[in-house]
Length: 451
Ligand code: NDP
Ligand code: 2IT
Image (cartoon, rainbow, N blue to C red; front, top):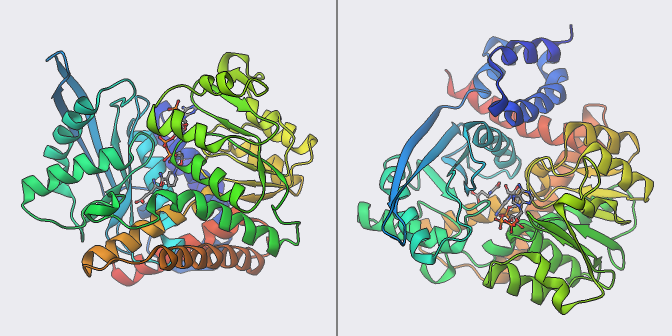
C-alpha cells in the first residue's frame, strides 16, 4: 500500500456522507504531497498531515430570528477555524440550505492551502449557515445576520479570525454583519472583509476573485505556450459574484463568453452574453436567469431537468476555455468528456472544487491545461488581505494599486505552482504544484511553531 493510500485509509475510518466533499478535497491533497511525505521525514515526525486534516475548532450555534410575519425561525450557524499557522483564520461565510459541517470543513481545508499560496499572512477558516437568503426580504436578511453575529462575534476579530463572503453572502450581508459586530463590541475594526467601500471596504474586492481567475488563466496559457484568450470562445457557469466578474474581465480582453448558469438552468447566447442584463437580473432583481431569453429571444435557456445525464448544459458547448464558477462538483466526468471532444484547451476553476476528481483526471490525461481553484481563485482572499492591511493602517488604496497588486499576486502564484510541479517531476500538473507549494509553507510553519 502506498503512503498516500495508507494515510487515506487511516483518515477514512470515520467517513460519513456529510463528509464526502471534505474527503474528496483531502484525498487529492494527500496524493499530491505523498512524494514530499516520503522524502522528508520531518513531516511524519511532527505528524503534520494528521494535525492538518483536523480543524483547530468547529464552533456550531443556534440562530433564532423573527421573519416578516413575526414567526420565529431557527437555523444553525458554524465557524470552522481550521489552521492559523500562517496568520489569523481567514475565509468566507456561506449562506445556503445545503450548508453543513462537511461542506465547511472542505472549504476551510482548501482555504488553508489557498491562503498559503498567496504568500500573505493568513490562516484558513470557513463558516456559514443553512439559512437561505433567497426569497427573503432585506429586513429578514438583516434580522438573520444580526442574530448570527450575536453568537459569532465572540470568536472573531482582526487578529483572530476574519470572515468574508461566499455563496449567498455579498456586500449586503457583510454590511449587516459588520453593523452588528460594531454595535456589540463598540469597536470599528476590520473583523470582516468584503465591506462596502464607503465604510471600510477595499476598492476592487467585489471584482477580485473573478478578475484574478482571468489573470491566472492568462498567465497559465502563456507558460504553457497556448494561444491567448483574445477572440476565443469561453464558457462560464454560475451567475453570481465570481461568474459575473470572470465574464466582465473576459469581455474586457475581447474573449467571447457564450454561457452562464444559475441553480435552475443555463443560458447559451452564441453572440456573447449581455452582461448588463445579467447584472440587472442576478444582482439587482435577484431573479431566475430564465428571464434572459425574454430580452434575447435568439439565446437558449436549458433548465436543470433537461441537462445531459450526469452532466451540466454549459459544458456541452464547444469552447477554447471553460470557467466553472458556481459550486462544488458541477463539472463531472461526462462534462470533461464533452469538453475534450469539443476541443477545449483549458479549464480554470473559479468556484471551489467545481470539478470532480474523475473529471480532473480525464482532463489532465488529455493534456487540457487545468487550473485548480485553490490557485486560480485566490485573488478574492488576496484582496481581502489587502482590505485588512488598509483597515489596520487606516489607509485607502487606489483602484490601480489594488489591481496591480492583484495581477502580480496571481502571476506569482501561477509561476510558483508551475515551478513546483516541475521541481517535483510533474511538469504541467497545476493540481500537484498547488498542493505541494501550499502545503510546504504551512507545514514548515507548523514545525517551527511546535505542537
Ligand atoms: P454567489 O452566491 O454570488 O453566486 C453563486 C452562483 O452559483 C449563483 O449563480 C447560484 O445560482 C449558483 N449556485 C449556487 N449553488 C448552486 C448549486 N448547488 N447548483 C447550481 N448552481 C448553484 O456566490 P459566489 O459567486 O461568491 O461563489 C461561487 C463560487 O465561488 C463558490 O464555489 C464559492 O465558494 C467560490 N468562491 C467565491 C469567492 C468570493 O470572493 N465570493 C472567492 C473564491 C471562491 P442562484 O443564483 O440560482 O442561487
Ligand atoms: O473561497 C474563498 O476564497 C472566499 N470565499 C473568499 C474568502 C475571503 O476571506 O475573502
